[in-house]
Amino acid sequence: MASAAPIDPSLRIGSVRLAVADLPRSIEFYERVLGLPLVSRDNDGALLGVDRESPSLELTAIADATPVSPHDTGLFHVAWLHPSRAALAATVQRIVRGGWLIGGASDHGVSEALYLSDPDGLGIEVYADRPREQWPRPADGHAVKMVTLPLDLDDLMAQAPPQAQDAIAPDTSVGHVHLKVSDVPRALAFYRDVLGLHEQAQLPAAAFLSAGGYHHHVGLNSWQSSGASGPPDSAPGLRNVGFELGDADALAALRRGLADAPGETVAARADDGHLSTSDPDGNRLTFVAP
Image (cartoon, rainbow, N blue to C red; front, side, top):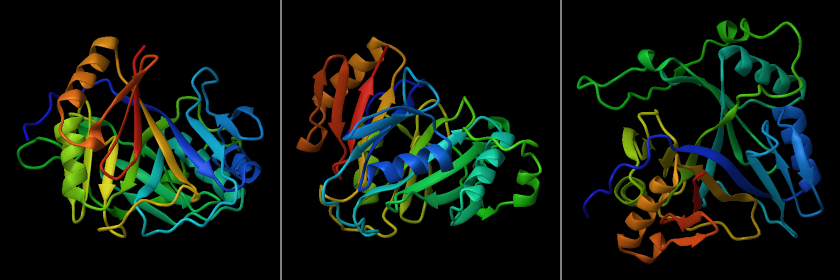
C-alpha cells in the first residue's frame, strides 16, 4: 500500500496507561523509586506525573491478576526521557537508594539509557538524549544509527547533584514506548504506512520510528515474541499510549488517513476530540490535539 502522509512532526507521547496487579505496590514504586509525584488515587487506579494538569502515567488495578509472560506481545518498556544527564544520574541514585535492581545500561549513540522492571515485571527505561547534532548518522545523512555500547556509568554519575532528589526532574516525559510484536514488518507497515511515522533505524528483528526527526517515539521488536499472541486481560501490561498532536488539523488529517486504510486493525473511533485505534498486535493508541 502507499505510504501515509507524514504525521505531525510535533507529535509527542503525553501519557501511558498500565494495568497492574497490586495498585498500592505499584504506586509506591513509581512514586518513591522512579520519583513520579502522585496526583490522585482511588481504589481502582491512580494518576502520577510531574504535570498535575496532564499526568503522564495512569495505573489501573486488575483483580485476580495472572503473571506477565515475556513471550507475549505487548509492552517491552516505557522510556522516561530526562532533560539532562544530571537529572538522569539523580534518578539512577534514587533507584539504587530504593533498593531496586538495574538490569542493564547502554550507550545508544543518540542517548544514554538504563533499564529496570516495575513490580509486575513491566519494562522501564530511564534515559537522556545527546544533542541532535551528535547523533550518529548513516552515510547518506538520513535517519540515525542506533548502537548498543557499554555505558560509562562513572562519567554519568559524576553529573549527579550533591543532594539526593526525591522527585524526578520537572521536565521528564515519556520519550518513547518500545513494543513486543509478533511480526516486525507487519507492525512497521502500520506505524509507517498508516500512521505516517518515519522509520529511523533497524536492528535484527527490530525497527524504530518517529515524528519530526526524533530517534524514535516507537520501538518494535520480536526478539521473544515472534508469532506470539497478546497477553490475557488478566495480565499486567500496557493498556494505552496517549499521543499528542500539535493542532486539530493534524488530528483531522490522521483521522482521514485511518479511515482510508484497509483492515479492521486500523478502524478508528473519534470521541470528544480523541482519536483511538489499535495496532496489528492490539496495542491501543489514542491521539489528541489541543
